[in-house]
Amino acid sequence: METISAEDVGIGVDLSPALSPLTFSLYDSFLSSHCSSCFSLLPPTPPHSLYCFAACSLIDDSPTVFPPNVSPILSTSDIRAALRLLTSISSSASLPHRFGGLLTNHHRLMADSSFSVAIQRAASFISAVLRSDGENTVLEEAAICSVLTNAVEVQDRTGVALGIAVYDSRFSWINHSCSPNACYRFLISPHSTTTSSFQKTLPRVTNSDKVHFSSITSTYEGTVRYGPKVIVRSIKRIKSGEEITVSYIDLLQPTGLRQSDLWSKYRFICNCGRCAASPPAYVDSILEGVVTLEHERTTVGHHEGAVTVGKMTNHIKEAIDDFLSDDINPTTCCEKIEGVLHHGILNSSSLRLHPSHHVALHAYITLASAYRIRSIDSETDFERGFEMSRIGAAYSLFLAGASHHLVSADLSFAISAANFWTRAGESLLELACKFLKESSVEYDDVKCSKCLMLVENHREIKETFNQILKCAVTDSDSSQVTWSFLTRGCPYLQQFKSSIDFSFTGTNCKREESSVDQRVSVLLLSFHCLLYADLLTDLCYGQKSHTVS
Image 1 (spheres, rainbow, N blue to C red):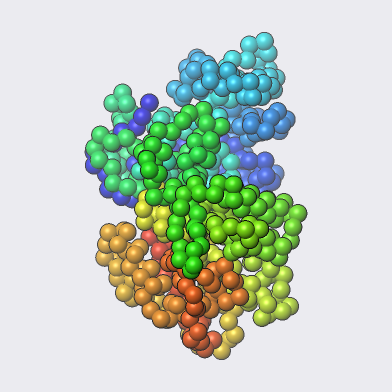
Image 2 (cartoon, rainbow, N blue to C red):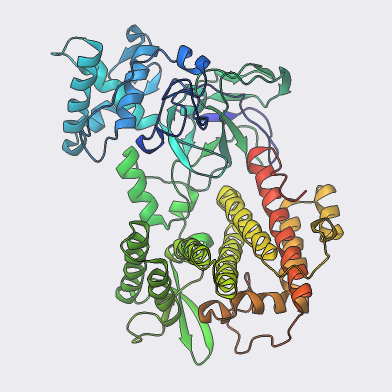
């Protein structure tokens, strides 16, 4: 099955109305903090331990169960979602290979012993809860397989994955691509929340059987209904007759890891243009690229020194895992990761990870978090805390710069880039607030009218991105001074010319600014980061973040 656009569609256009799920379930770690019905945060004193409002507890008629852990590949949230699906869809409309019109992949999953044993155990548990025929659990197996095949992670606005949901064929029939032309967003609101009804013109979208999924005019219902809703939105121009695709997985991975991820989760091999490209697409070449240091010159190579690169990435991954599991403190984490990023492994090779290598990207996320913790831990030592905040902000900015190279080549990375640029802008804003109170400059005074005008005039999106960065990062002596200030005391970042120019520089800018000028420069840089993030947020979600204003 596939979903096809029946007309030409521009960038940043909603392709579907807000679709309610067939089934959903929170992850176990959020059951005590979020509503099991609408996924909203629970109030301090909720009327029910699992629900935010009485309306949510009344509308949710599925059994409250806490399934056993049957297997690492089948989570308790999968089982709860399958149970809810069985109570919401008529069994007469279901068969092992189809459940409520959704593909189950029952034959493939049950042919795999690693899945079949877990599915059978879970089916027996569900059968006992529903008091159905324990001898024949084919229907329960089909429900579980349908969840495994069609469920998507439900994320809040900050990108935190709260749980899973399964939607009807208008969403579930949309195929995967590693370079998709559409994305989706979730609407998470308490059931008591209402909005005024309105008419929204939507493009005509059909399935491969030419059955229309949406009419020219669709009505968005005023009352928020059962479970988190989803809306599909274009992030690229789509021609009439072209297939609409979204991504099922994290796109910040090279081809081999994406293929492995898709096979382990969905049991198919992707043949999209990005996966089939030979030589590899530019984004994949940098996501697994290495840099060779040769007499102060740099060359980028791919698949060179596989053993050395493998050692470097494993060392960084181990440090990240140890930090996330609290096995090492933030200081040790920074030392281990930065040591590999800057010096390589065992100082025996000139190979380094490309700044946009997929493991390096995760390293920057971890380092920004670790330096933030170190800043908080240094509250009694203002200068030390400020230094940690400054380097943490530098890593957030460098991560955002790396994402610019990806999103400029392929707008499929827009959601990740929006999150990275938002974090960079917020961390820089927080850093500016830490300056000594010797400045009378107000936040409202620090804006770039030139870039604001570009955005308001609705220029071509990539052109606007480049102009914002040209203004903020590459076009002035002040930007070089700001980068030098942010990276002071961080040898790894100091070697790069700027947060988006990864060429090595032998000297850093030595010009100093007063603390007032530094604060203004950091605020201006924060403004540009948040403006860039706002453009991406509007593209992906159809709404501004309002952080800039």
